[in-house]
Length: 454
Image: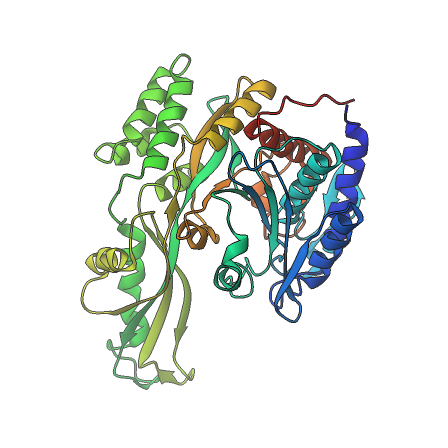
C-alpha cells in the first residue's frame, strides 16, 4: 500500500525546492538543481552521477537496476528554464515556489521541473518498494534545453554515449485536448525540426529627405506579404494522419459530420478543404495546419544604420519548422518558390524532425493506464510543432515519447499557455496525477500490477 498523501507532500516539496533554484538559461547554472537531486537520491542509497560539461552546467543521471529481461527505459527532463522576465508581471515571485490555494507558482513549474519531479518520484517509489523491474530504469535530468543543447544533450551524446543505452525514453510533451465534448490524451510520437532563414533585400540607399523606390526596407514588404498569403505544400506524416483518424473514430457515433472531416484531414489531397470546415477555434485550426506542412514564420527584422539614410540592406529572420522527413534543402526549395528570385535566401542551423512508431509496447502501456483511469478519454499520437533534443537521440536509435497528462482546469489557462509566460504555475492535482500516471506506466511496461494506496 502507498500513502498517496505522503507522496503528494513529497512531490510538492521537491518541486518547490527546484523552482527556488534559479536555473534561467542563459546563463543556465543547472549545477545546484543537479546537486539537489543527487542529494535526494544518495540519501536513498542510489548512486547518481553529476556530469558537468563546463563549470555550473550540470547534468544528472542515475540508474535503478532491473533484472535484464528487457531493455532499459529512460525518464528524461531538463533542468534549465527560460528567464522569468519582469517580476512585476508575476502575481507571486517567479522563483518563490509559493504554494497558494492548491497551486505551486514559479518559473519552471510546468517547463520542465514538473517532469523532473514526476521522474524522481517514479524512480524513488520503484526503489523504495523494491519492485521487480524487468529492465533498468534510468533517470536523466539534463542542461541547456532552452538554448541550443550545447552543454546538455549534445555534450552527453558526444562524451557519454555509453550512458544513453535505453531504446525508449519518456520526456516532456503530450497534452489534453477536448474536441466536440470528447477528451483526448495526446502522446507525442513525433516532433518537427527547425531552421533559421535569413532573407535579405538590397537597395540603392541615399538621403532620407529624397525618398525613391529602390529602398531595401520597402523591397522587403512584398516578401512579408507573400509569407502571409502563401502556405507551403502539404505533406503526409504518419503521426499526424493517425491523430486525425483517431479523433475521427472517437467522434464517429455522436459527431459523424465532424468525424468525416477529420478523416479527410488525414489525407493530403483533401486536408485543406477539411481544415477550413472543421468546427474548431482559430488556435486549434492553426495548430492542426502546422501538422500538415513546413511553416515559415517571420520573427526578426533588421535594417539601416541611421534615421537620416535610406537603407541599402534589410534582413528578415524567418523561423522555419520542418516536418519529419523534410530536409533543409527541401525547405529552401519550397520557400524560394514562394519568395521568388528577387531576394537572397540563406538557410542556417538546420535541426531535423523525428518520428517514432506510435504502436510500440510503451505507447500500449500508456493507453492501458489511461483507459483504467479515464475510460472515456482517447489516447492518440501527436506531433510537437516545437522542438527538443529528440532529433539527437533519434539518430542514436532512441525513441523519445512525450507524455505528461496535464488536465485543463475550468476557469484556468491551458497549461501550455503558461509555459514561458508570466505567472507560470501548476496545480497540485496535476503535479500528483501526472507523477502517478508516469509511475503506473513504468509498472505496466514491467508487468507489475497497479499498486493500491490510501
